[in-house]
Length: 504
Ligand code: PHE
Image (cartoon, rainbow, N blue to C red; front, side):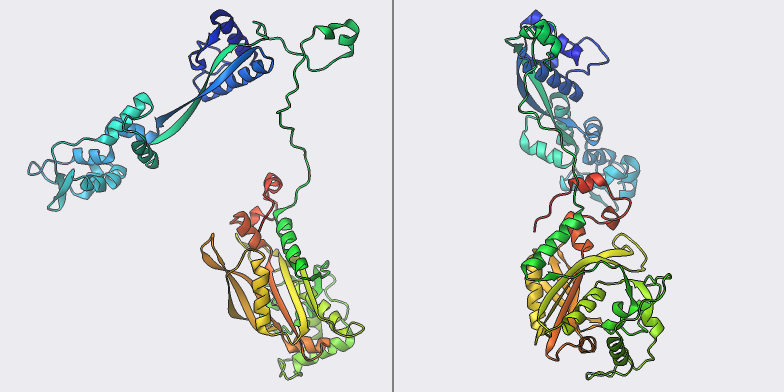
């Protein structure tokens, strides 16, 4: 840097000005890259801005635009276009054996044959003759080769933009921008680079040197160094958006801060049969120590056991033996609906009787599943429940339209589904314009009377529920295809810090 600055100053001293920095005759020096190269340009620009900030020089910047050949372009400039090479390989009509497509590949190579054969036929340079091909004309003008040769020597073509953009599209040439500068002496010109003072010191003050010292000017244009700070993980940002939508729709947040639940709350209270496959160890993580939960409220427990075993409230029940041991097993909760169940029971039995409510939660759940690009053994669920007198299925559909349209998903479809705890149940699909397809975004339904009535809800109260994962919309929003980019030890902290704040 110093050397380059010194060189510029002595050139100015000798010649008064520099008309084109690309023509600076730099002494061969390992520290200074050639002035026509990209690094050279950068070094010169650095030296000039530093000298001009001290008013030792003034300079103007100029930009030159030219084209250069890419490797395939170079090959065509040398050997001709693919179509010309195919043409050259063939005999003239009636003057030799026509070549089959296979033989053309053998002569010009697969790449040239693939591209060149079709183009040569289209240009009427070659034609079919029996089972093979022959020349259709005895002279061709290979304009592609000629254009590329012209670009090679002059950086552009006389034929103009259309040809250039066609060659660019075919990936044969690239645009090169180069910067160069004209330089003049500035008001503070001198041949020696003096490092300006950056600090006023005690020594300068006592010796009086400050009166003649040359101080570095403040650069008010400089960008400050980025300050280090904490950053929200994308999952937390999307969670915040969901939370805001719930809050603006009048929902209250449920407490969900326990990962371990009893099978009673995770399954039984939700009328999930004790023989259901989801309750097996390949789907659910069971806790071994302690292995059993404290007993749930006795009367409620008894009515849940009865509705499973014998039915009630208009239901036949599962008519299968009830196991207390199964009910007490501790699990890592498989859905936040375990928390919703506890809140719903509170709602049904609260002092003063049932009052309509809208509740939501967003928290972590666990499933003992094989992991892949889109599944981990843990993820977050976004869940909402709405309890009111005489709610109907159209109420739920209408609500879901409003809820998801606040996330920008205005086009929904519903598909009948099965959950042990809801009837009817619906999978929710949304049309995703960027992916151009319908994607499943959630699950929903109306909780069954077998679940609600043992909790103590009045008979006319209906409860809607719906749930979705937090990871999926986050991945779609951030364009992530592998969930490990989002969660786990492979997460890149820079990516977390720099990921955009999300907007709907
Ligand atoms: N618990 C369901 C799930 O795991 C979501 C859901 C909640 C469905 C409430 C219906 C009602 O997908």
